[in-house]
Image (cartoon, rainbow, N blue to C red):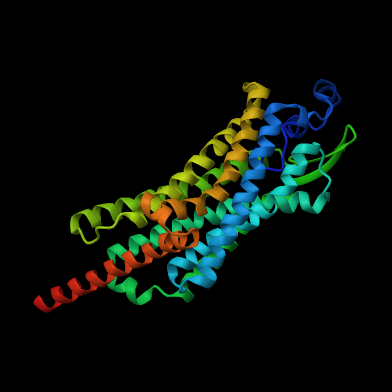
Amino acid sequence: MEMADDVYDTSEDYNYIEDNFTAKEEHVFQHQPTCLKEVQCVSLIAVSVVIFLLGLCGNALVIWITGFKMKKSVNTTWYMSLAISDFVFCAFLPLSIAHMALEDWIFGHFMCKFASSLMFINMFSSIFLLVVISVDRCVSVMFPVWAQNQRTIQKASVVVVLAWLLAIGLSIPSMIFRDVRSHLGRNICFNNYSQYPDSHKTVAVSRFIAGFIVPFTVIIFCYSIIIVRLRNNKMTKSSKPFRVMTALIAAFFICWLPYHVFILLELKHQYYDHSILATGLKICTSLAAANSFLNPVLYVFMGNDFKQKFKSCLLARMENAMGEEGRTISRYLSRSSSMDGRASTHI
């Protein structure tokens, strides 16, 4: 949205951002807070509460398991970083819930900027980490001997830090353009592009390209290579790690694509019905936020078959789901190294 750039926005932002709070628009769109009397608004609040509870608990569990219960590895480094990103985002969801219920931003100017930035740090860090994981898998399959020697926890940690720094850098526009203004007796946290009108389009398009198009192109390319290579060599029988990663990527795609579509539609808001655009932006923002609790759910339910899930405890299931990937890759690397060794003796 740029009006709904995050889950802390409401549909009314749209009216005020684009029209600079003109007297005409103020008259047309003046209304009293009625969120708790509207089914749609109450539903979105309920969804946000569920996302908050599941996301906070689920990601905390993933962080605890990968950080304290499992042997530290490159794989646990990737997944713990994803969980930390989602956990931080979910921890600030109560601000969104209060904002939607009160239709008033009561948390001040700094939190308006900070809360909005968190969503984009979460978005960019998540997609960048998925790209890193995909490239890591591709390199492990294409160059198994090199990967076995070079894939270290220290290097993985450096890559994670770089991904986070890049995500923070791309989230700077929220720190710059988010603003708080009083209107009709309420405080509104919105994107103020009035001084730089062209920046609205620049920010929206750059986020779509950097946060969606380019990453997914790289991910699809990497997985295409992995699938072809593994099918040709038939070096692994387990499909579990690939189901987990495919599910994570699919969840990100489903959660974030509608959001970006409506963000781009908003650039031409004069051609679309305002109520449809505003409602779509609210729903798509909640859908995007849902990605933060889906990751730990996928760790649990994609790691084992149905019967095993009910025979084992929750912690064991999550540990097994994440550990299986590392074991499968390790077996693949070991077999590849052995084959490469035998091949070199014949040369």
